[in-house]
Length: 374
Image (cartoon, rainbow, N blue to C red):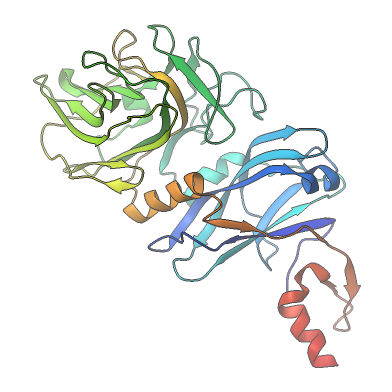
């Protein structure tokens, strides 16, 4: 059984519940720790001495560290790990390794989002702040495509994952992204999504937009419409007519919702908390070179009041199984992933070729080998 050397401790991380409806390849999976004493006790380099592998494998998996918050005796941490395949029937087992002298973080975090060279993610924004392992601007694009955003007055908020941005419904309280044709060069296919949390519901003449695109031929695309206490995915066509699908009624503020919409060139399919709604099939005419906004549509139109986290834009239609597992991985983390205990990676000499077998893995092949020798 292969294992990484030089690490003092490791932990089994297993996808046990909420498995995807179909296997998912090259999936960026959230691995989260809250008030974990082991991360504090065993790290030798402030959490940079971390590696992830499939359990029993010595190939390091790409990962991005979004959060590492030192609480003194314990650590809060959030990682995104690119998993080669998440199985739909059997558990998927990862192992996190910690405590390597001189260990460093994975050198290219953007590899987490390249899907083994497919490069479907056009932009990924964690929208962090304090405790976020990054640098200004707050809307750093994690993909390596350079589609960073410019913050224009948002505050720090408590996100569904680490920190997020808090929008106060003013004309200047938004994040300005590059042009729509820069972020999404092709008219289709694409997927756009985020987590959002209203701070207040709106009157019928007020609308809130989580993500706003200006569309081609004078039309516009609106993500997260919030008028008459409803939320919608929708767009305005070239003639100005609005096409939309209601996906929630946020009767109570302070609740996190996942918004997602896909477009394959024909069907504009909105999702609410990973549940697909009826597609809209008429009027969409693509993007133009006007800047995209988070928390607004045009800067003076439909500004958002609340929290926005984890904005992602992809140049592919994400399948329903992908969207659902993505939602479960974040919104029902405890029902999706279990963590084993921290295990010391003490090594014992094996009798085969003078190699070393890890006690960490003794519950697997090593146990069978030793048992056969008794």
